[in-house]
Image 1 (cartoon, each protein chain N blue to C red):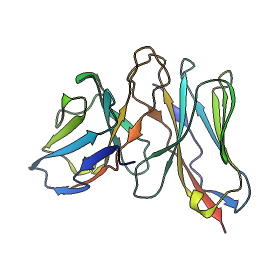
Image 2: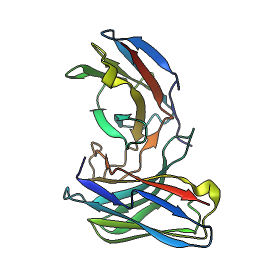
Image 3: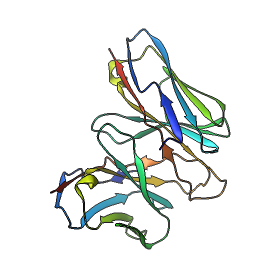
Length: 116
Length: 113
């Protein structure tokens, strides 16, 4: 699905580094999401943005800081991460029609993050 | 705490047979249900969505929903080796608009040639 792109695809960082993950959607959607996928665990929702406004923060530690400058772009700023934060970070987008329960999310390819 | 339960498998099915994947969910108010396929090292790819009780067919795939039993299933007919992947069941909230999905851990399906 080339409608949602993510960069970089792989990232290795030390615990003292600061880095950012980028997501861009070309589907004309209004909502964007960050998910984390760790080994042996289900995908975990991190953040939801709807029309650039954050509507959900799923108790994510402050070392993860999202930014959504417009409906097409979403960033995840990372600082002072821990080795247990190593995971696949997935971005998704959806149309997000108010009052409609039929919203479908489409995922980007993900960023494989390794924290040393 | 919303939960989505799946048997992690692996589920091994001979090529050409029907693969049956099951999922239960805890939030009775859930209204949207999705099956995603995820190949190793790749991101989830939407296979089916279902919103009403009953069956929904798309090619070799059939999704079944029973809200009274809080049960969703996915049938794959004429299974092919390329169907070997992890299948993720996901459930959405009834609020409408932008809501995060709650995922199960996934069922690892192996189609034996």
